[in-house]
Length: 429
Image 1 (cartoon, rainbow, N blue to C red):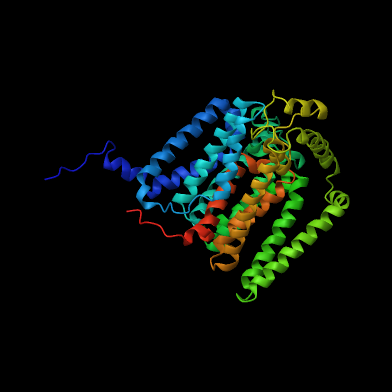
Image 2: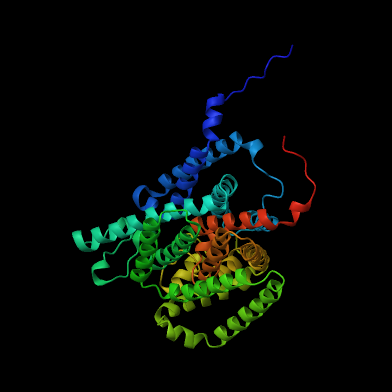
């Protein structure tokens, strides 16, 4: 008679690590950490942030192991994401700063792993709730600290980057370091809160408070970047609403018409870009970016095919980033343009791989939102619109919370529309 095989991990621990409450709490903590990295570094420094991320990764790995047989792995990870991350990792071989590239790749993989965990253990509506709860907490705390700094103490909170300008009507930064980053987070929160309201995931008073909170943060941030992004997200929301109302037989024609119209609008916006900048009252802000982009563009041809090597956020003491900062006279933590940033770090090959990644993620999520009845599918394409348009002015999509959201949206879109789902596969049992 065969004796039952003993396991090293007690069954009670496996049950706990695989429970819905544990996975929900861990996903919430991962999202909060991803969006509050600036505040965590300000409080306890890089060692504290790395320690917190390491704990989250270990717990996520244990939770994965506890649910191994319950997760559908077939065709899970999009090839486009794997290839882009693989190319970033391969840049270690020719990097001008190999240790920095190794560190940047590991940091990138940490947030990708947490994103994979969230996408696997939470379904679409649960992800919206997790992101909504996290951003509701962080924006509430941000506004509270701004009131404390600007009205009660009348002094900046320097280690968090809060300048205490709320008494003057802004701009405010909250927990996110800059007004632009706060406004990006608030816009993503606004989209998330609207989806929560439409899906009745939260009570109406909570939804009303959340939407008002996000709107107030956007207005007080005074970000010229977010004005353009908000208009595009609003137009995308309207287009998606009309697309969902169209008859299924006519929808493909409308999709192609919308694509052609979008390209035409982008061309016109580029031709009249100076006028657009004046309308947004963003000339001074744009001048800073333009000077930075010129410096990046001059360095790209040196390593045009494969790039200088992946780092993610820019280090302060390595060439060519030190040269860029010396020429502009301003310290920048990134290229203020995700597409130029990718081009500089991993070359034209990396840029093409990145474009394929975001194009597949957006097109799949848009088609899912157009054809599925539940409004929860609208969350991913609208968040991607916000991220992709913002990427013209910021590089936040490449690191931390932006990268995490991109991978989550990519995986959920792939789960619904990947060509690999049609391949035969064996039962996990």
